[in-house]
Length: 198
Image (cartoon, rainbow, N blue to C red; front, side, top):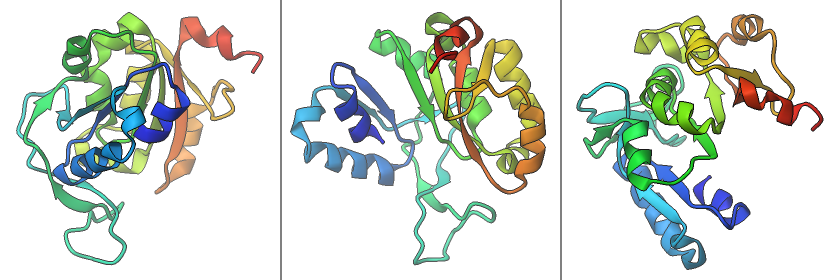
């Protein structure tokens, strides 16, 4: 997603975070093949969390040819990480730029990423696009309701579907998803009027 976003938003800096060495090196190689984008993309090989901890491996990268070291639910392959962990707020504060948009696809770590970025999210109120995957959250010690309540009450954000319509029945949608995921936009409640006539 990094390269298409950098090409589409050609006046912006794109910050791309990959915790696994495999994905990071692949992204780095792809960026080298696109030197016109390279100056506007900042890459970080780190794990994002609200907790200080060592993370040696995560399930990512979907190798359809092998059955080795697969996650029992989403079938991601186990990949080694850089062993670096920091919060989203720490990382983005170092860059020192206004944050307009955040994309999150972290296979169950959503609440840790959002909690770790609460300060910077409250500061800039960026639009967020994320994968909502309730069937993965129990493994990481929280429920879909805890994530929804955090987004609505702690961040003061609301859910939008991919047509930018407000989602008012998120708790009902969560119950119907079973073993599936769906993508949502999140917007700060003060910005909701911007999407009313799209």
